[in-house]
Every structure is written in C-alpha cells, then in structure tokens.
View (tube, rainbow, N blue to C red):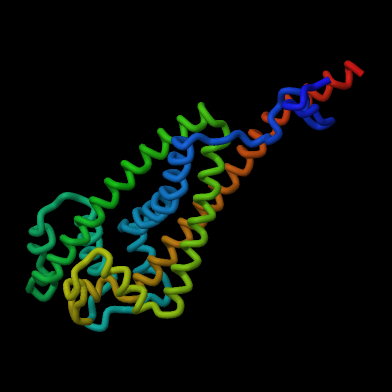
Amino acid sequence: MPSPSEPAASADRPAGTPASSRPRRTVGQRILQSILVVSLPVLLLGLGARLVATPVFLWLEYHRPGFPADHWGMGTEERMTFGSYGMDYIMNLAPPEYLGGLVSPEGGMAFTPAEVSHMSDVQHVMQWGLLSAFVLLVVSVLAGWWLHRRAPGAASAAWFAGAWLTVLLLVAACVAAVLGWQSFFAAFHSLFFSSGTWTFSISDTLIRLYPTQFWIDAAIAVALVTLVGAFAVMLVTTRRRRRAAAASAAPWAGGRGRLRSRT
C-alpha cells in the first residue's frame, strides 16, 4: 500500500511517473525559447526584404502590365539600368561616387546629392540589418540545437509560437497599410531615417525609378514571402511536436502494459 505522501498510481499513469506529461522548463530554456519566438518574425521579414532588393524583382515590376510609366519619358531599359545601379548600391560597400558619378541620358547628373545621401543611408540600414539578421540566425540555430538536445520539443514549440507571432504582426501591419498607406510609409521611414532626408520631388530620379506603386508591390511581396515562411514553419513544427508527443507517451504505454501484466 502506498504511503500517504505518495498517491497511488492511476490507471493512466504507472507508479513513479509525474502527474504532468509536459516537462518543466528551466529559466535558461525559457530564455532560449523566447529568443526563438522573437527572432523568427525578424528573420522572415529580412528574407522577404532581401528577395525584393534585387534586380530580378525590379525587372518584374518594370515589365508587369499596369506599372506606371515615367512622366518624363524615361524608357524601361533606362529605368532598368539606373534602377539596378540603385539596388546594387544598397547591397554592396561601394562609396557614394558609385551613384554620384552616373550621368543621365540628358547629360546631367543622374542622382542629386540629396538622393545619393539618402541612398547611402539606405545602404547603411541594409548592411547593418543583414548583419544583424545573420547574427540572429546563428544564435537561433545554436539555441534550437541546444534545446533539441536538452529539451526535445521546446524548440519546435518556440518556433510554432514565433510563426503565430509573425502572422499577427503581419496582419497588424497590413491593416495599417490598407487604412492609410502614406501614413504607414512615413511611419516606417521615420524609424530609420531623419525627417526631411527621404522626401523628394516627383521629378527626381529616385521617384521616377521607384514610384509609389513600386513600394506597394514591394510591401505585398515581402508580406507574401513572410506569410509563406510562417506557414511553412507551422507545418514543420506541428509535425515535430506530434512526433515528440508520441515519443513521450510511449513509456506510459509500456508502463500500462506492465501494470496489466501484474494483475
């Protein structure tokens, strides 16, 4: 007969098995889980932004039906040439002269000093953003690997929660953009750039190369990439969590079998 301090084993749980099937996480494990949850939206958004900041996306935009033509007569090929220079510039470590030395078809400077200065700011944001994302990716991989070895199922649970967090943040951003694109666009730029450094005339080259429709399409593309990534993470982690649950339930089944054999 069990002592008063040890409750009798139930029909569903063999003696010596904890009442809860979910193991308690240590403080360190919960911290690592939190890192995985928070890092996933950043990594997925970074992936989407990186895929958009390419000449391939630029080509698709300039050649898709309905994309607004340049009011001052710049053709598609000229747009591709100067637009690709802009994309390449923000993704490499070239000096401002990379853009400042370009000459327009009319013989003048393709980009004004203010435009070059803003593109330099964009370059710095992109470079630091990609570097931060890479560091975050390495930390996430190491944290996931450690959790997988020490607390099976913990990493999958964290990534699953991170995927849901990504979807919620994405929905909130989409609602804000739909309700007021200009306000959303201005708020986004104010996070990274000083006031007055990112606004230009409609006749400036940057606006002619990257009009409002370009940024709307870019935002949609980033959102789609992020959403697909979040659902992919949900699918993979759901399968892993089911496997982990089945593995943790296996000893219980064996224990019930042993209990039956004794009766």
